[in-house]
Image 1 (cartoon, rainbow, N blue to C red):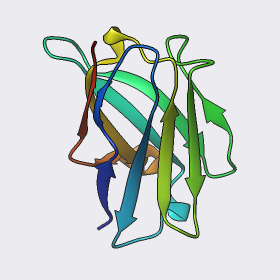
Image 2: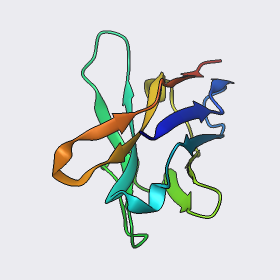
Image 3: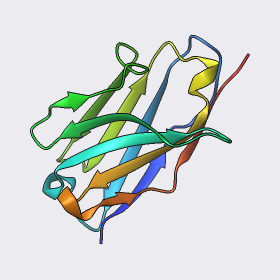
Image 4: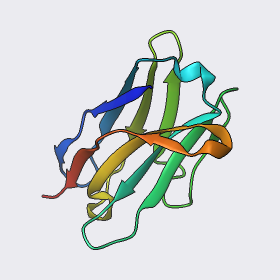
Length: 117
């Protein structure tokens, strides 16, 4: 069973950048149909942020387009999320996931991102 561990969260000022990493162990991320990131702010529903397919194709919601970039390195078994031009509304716990096709997702434990002056 693959395990995912996120890192790179923290406190950043509005307009700043952060790079989140998701390290996989116990299996290769190359076997998953997609890898992605979601987030959840206090009192709000989870929100999908980005995903990347096994072929490298990427998808983003409108809230992330032009600001966030997802990437994967199968050799290092990691997925990263580069976040630029951060806004206070980006404050949330960010979770990495591995999409097991129709069988569901494996999730990491999350990393806190706080955007505040």
